[in-house]
Image: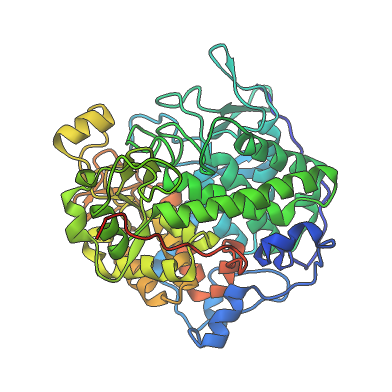
Length: 549
């Protein structure tokens, strides 16, 4: 399939303004608000660090969030780590070009690997940390080209066997084929029909919306998001996840392997990663949709869904010591709307490890909640995104950071960061993963340690005022990453060993490190990937215990 697309086809405006804090305002009033005031304001995240005195040298650029590498050390009081230059060189080697213009980065640049598989493709989710690195470095063109190219691909007809996918589905990845004889470039996209397991990526559309907002916040260029093409692209994505069906919950029902964990790992149903990204994408779209007839219709649907989703997640997915004790004492087989144990969770299904793992101070959003099922595993990406999107209340965000500090050995170990905890072993591994040889215990998605998650941890740390946690994690990563050749993931209970099938020079491991470093040195970058708390969002209602006295 040929996917011609001129990166300059969409009008470019060299504006030095950014989105106003529309996405940070009262959701209940959003439909009545006038057009955006594009005068730049500091975000909550930028204000908080200077006012709280957490950083002595916070750089607040006038027009965009920028960080010039390696000259930033002259502006900031930080000496660049020797790894930074190597990381930038490796990141630039991964660039993919379409008709002479950079449109993304390949997943891995590992020439030593015998099997390329699809690691030579541009993945939507993988490109996000690369995009943020380029935005923070004042190089937004590649991000704009990527957004336009994937938007063009979204419009293609998508079929798996004889079934046609929804019009709004975004690709998992795409590849550019260069024909030197004909001097043509051809784009081939994968919407899940070539993926292992044939699962469509639910998260791609959400990441696309989140990245579009990051681009707009960073550059101040409103013109891209306001084009009819981008407005339609957002509406198509939203149509897929806001459509009415048989759902009794506001969460999004998903198949296994539809996100970063793209193999069978028991995350089917309502995984925390998808729900957190769904919430963040809804809020990001709300700030960019136009106030026209179509836009207002979607805004109304988004506002209703956000209120229901935030209540559901904060009430039923949240777990701390008190809530664990309540579940431990649940009555079962309750009937009628007065039931406290609404999902009929059997207390005996609480795993033994959880009682020792849960500290007195701390908490997290568990992996999954559905009828008679609670997946109590910790998933790093979902919890970090919950903090960044303000799905987590300030109190819950602080509790998540408390948990990470209290369980540092388990969740961080010798290489940040565990993708999930704990690993599934023995009989449970055979049942849940289908005896997957790649997801053995403490490997890959089954309790492996993924350096790319460093940028999400750092962003969450900065937002919650815990930069020392991020600094400690970054210093830990710096002892190994470059020396080990930027692996995709690490294996072992504490992440000591390079993953048994890990690719070297994994692009998002490289970009994740750069983004973490740049955010820690210039916290104003956080504004492009963080959303303030909506003060009017209904607070979580404390449920009474379900036992009888």
